[in-house]
Length: 351
Image: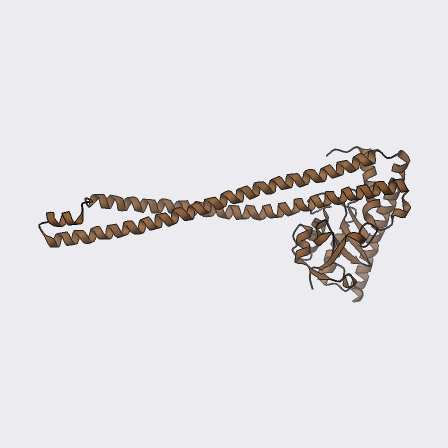
């Protein structure tokens, strides 16, 4: 989606107002800007929610594709087995035809040597038993193959549905951001300048907070105290803090751009821990702990069960997170002006 330099700058500025919670607060904004802030805040939240739904569908699509590949390989094997069974049935049919296919009682009447007939009857009975067994195998194989082919069709339909959902989620996110641009395009020039100034202050505050958090983490780790998280948590936090200033891009997971769950997933991957790229799933696989017991490396969730947003706790009531397309990766107060009413819990990844 193309944006003018003017509107992009204003959006970036407002993003600092809306999401950071580090330095800029509603008290710094004029009443008219506060109304704009609230509206854009709502649009940003809806855009991020759409992004997380995109991630959810993408994760499921990856699993469906793996299942589909396995099913197609299974169908290929079963079709080969079916051809082999049908070949055996053809052989039995030819054997029956060669035996004359004459009723056994009539053969007995026509045979001059009963011993010869008994030998022929035994052979014919064996052929008939083989035919019955082959027919059972054929029916079973046909049913198994039909079930597998139906499963392939079901998975292909599910994959298409997921691709459609991904397109819808992406379109919704873009629509929300475009609406925010239209709102900001109506601001007066002095309001834009004010927002730009606030954005500069916010970026400086975010960088300073990241540097301070890294220094505190290094100091407490080397001193053997202060930091109460695990060694792996320290690695995850240090990685996340090193990304402050990177861009927010929907569905991205590094190395230079992230969305919210992509940042937490990639940070913990550096510590050897695998997390799904979806905030709700990260909520599901982590252990709930009280806010009062939060440790650096814990995940911080917002909205019901983390459906909209996730960040990483770094201590002192702050988190590092990929906030939105306007601010990128920043450090924020976990219960700042925008976040406090949307907070939904802390998740312990390890320990």
